[in-house]
Length: 330
Ligand code: 13P
Ligand code: SF4
Image (cartoon, rainbow, N blue to C red):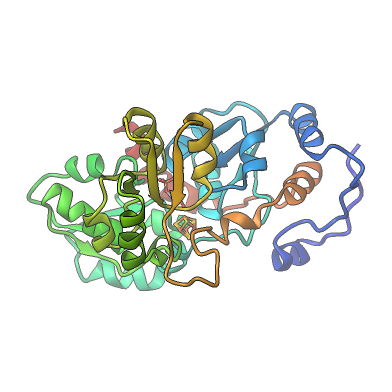
């Protein structure tokens, strides 16, 4: 039977999560596993989640993999341990399911950098351009797009666009610049960035590489151009993971959110992974504070109370679904 709940929707929206006390005497990971069975729920987790959440996931992966899985899920409930735009995407592509996010405030600096009204005005300046948006954006921005991409398939998506067409790429200028370099296509870039990937320090990475001369430097394409220019390999989270498994080197300096190191170390226990240093020594900037808002307690409560739930307007979902489906069908 459902526990009684004194949370009004407004209170939940303000706080972001269910703050009910969690019984410390229980085995929390086991209790979450039990709830999955009881509620016919499937847990999707991004590599940037804390290791304890990654360990509980039915599907663990990068943005593309999780979107592909979300589309196919037949269970009643999708619990998304990731950030808001990811859970929103899952709801859009599998709208009959209840989609839960442990903390509604798990946002994204890239998604926040692209307000729909401003983007609409920007788009109006280039009426003939094909609008390609990185999946790290809101449903409103997706609804204004022709095709969505993730860091795993961005090159393929750009190459699918006829050569004579102008392209708008939003919201990540760093990924955009990388795509211009890789595809040779001219693109009009929106000026957005990921606070985590922009925090890496070029100078400190160079210094660290001198201390570890045998380590390969690998980076996510949300990082700034000078950093990507010196990387031995650039790829999405799953691309980086594949690279370290296939590559013969034994140590790596990794420029992406530090959560991926958990799976890298599990896949390659004999190898060494060093998180790339950030500009500011006083903070854990290579951790995404939004991703880390999800905790085991919040995950447990979210499954127990089936809240917070992602709710979207049907018209908006129908508009936003088309560019996502174009990407998934590529
Ligand atoms: P990928 O999952 O596509 O590697 O993107 C990383 C990211 O920043 C997700 O928010
Ligand atoms: Fe957004 Fe960057 Fe966090 Fe990914 S790592 S969710 S792009 S802020």
